[in-house]
Image (cartoon, rainbow, N blue to C red):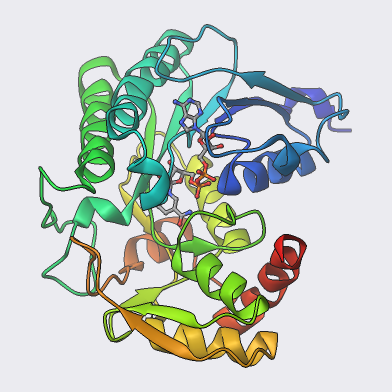
Length: 317
Ligand SMILES: NC(=O)c1ccc[n+]([C@@H]2O[C@H](COP(=O)([O-])OP(=O)(O)OC[C@H]3O[C@@H](n4cnc5c(N)ncnc54)[C@H](O)[C@@H]3O)[C@@H](O)[C@H]2O)c1
């Protein structure tokens, strides 16, 4: 008989009280692991993890990853970082520190423990891409001094640190480049397109399209994304990434707005506003590497994922 404690790991999730982190904590607990959720609650909330508190395998620690942390764990998922422009531009210096100092602190911990560490990187490392779809070998087209740079360049530098800790110190790294993900527990005030459209529709307000709505995005449902992160973590030490994780199905922003209106049954009209600076016109993952290395691809299509997301947002109306 398998003795369950022999496969039970103690897994740390930084940013564990956020949107993606809370789903990841839940899934890890579901697999029988112990979870240490580390978060400074900047954009994350205790509500996101309240259903986990009381579970003896779950522990929450309020901590800012820009400061060193000494704990004993078997694996680290480094997700701590505000992810939406409204939040990461609120205190851009802190955003860069979170990515860079956070990476140094977590990599230092992984080095000491000899454990695997996964970085939640982002499609933003590709900037406003001139190559479509974006494969992992594309180096990106990023403005180093714009208002989004604190996030984009912070995440790029974090990737550099991951690969240098790997080359120089042999740290077992995994780098996931996450593309737009949506689902329940997205921050309602994050200004991101999915949450914005859903809230506007549920409130019967006009839906704001930036530009003419012809810019395209691909949207990955949170459950698929968590599958991808966990599949990447489960790979052997030779697999470092970067690996794109996202849904390659492209929609224009206008199509998304129309789907949200149809799903909510709202009578909202669509209105147009100016595009914010550095807003990428197109973003689409090439997930060939994730398919071949992880055997992963998203299963949940936009229509299906919108329903639980809209249900979740009802509480904010
Ligand atoms: N959601 C997406 O579409 C998406 C896309 C690309 C990359 N990512 C990456 O995935 C990760 C999680 O994103 P999310 O969408 O869940 O965002 P989120 O804002 O909901 O979660 C981030 C969490 O990190 C915490 N945090 C921020 N700064 C911290 C610090 N200094 N110390 C400790 N905790 C800190 C926040 O409180 C929050 O709980 C981020 O690293 C983000 O860059 C997300």
